[in-house]
Image 1 (cartoon, rainbow, N blue to C red):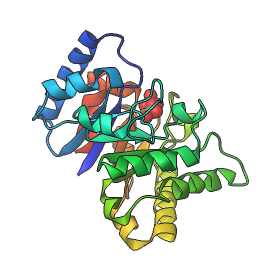
Image 2: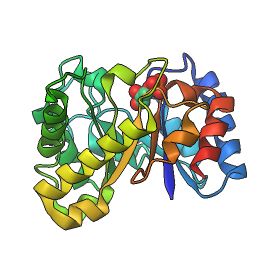
Image 3: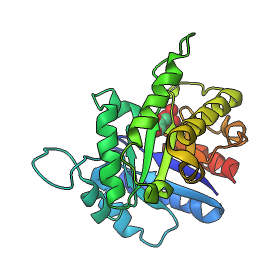
Length: 248
Ligand code: 13P
């Protein structure tokens, strides 16, 4: 089954709007079967949304998390608090967090702390830019290898790697299907080479960055792809509907 992960980022501005957006998303989930939908709202809306919509087929997650379960960490949210809010997922290492200073080593600690509480982790990786020498490949490999270093094999089933090239996030165009496929293969090969067959079989891999209703069919036709992570399109029910249909 394909997964559509909706990263609302810092949208919308009010809880009333968030409820309306979620209602539209929920409606789509009811009319379109056979696709897993995960919504990542701003943390401040998370508990209320998750509580009001218990039992709906949609799952909830946080957009980032700290690596300790409690303590003096102003402004942060712990995996324990995410779990307690009713969420089941957490996104870790998004480019928009890395740009503020989040490091591979921190991503590794956040992944371990979240898996300890059996949260499903979505680990975002991706190069800032491409260069002719293929250095971006090394960068993506390192992000994956470090992020998974403390993940217990028993929790591999709770892991998704989201390949999101930074240059495609918020951009007009996604890479073409061939490029997406090449990177899916690289991600899977890195997982297999470093963590073995079990990790290769259980860890899911999705693509993110400029997915929209125009390119969704082509992206879902990529072999070895378990789903998509969408930003802007998750805020627009018309876009979202086309993407969910393409996923089916
Ligand atoms: P866009 O879909 O808006 O390009 O954002 C992608 C993204 O960052 C999802 O996490």
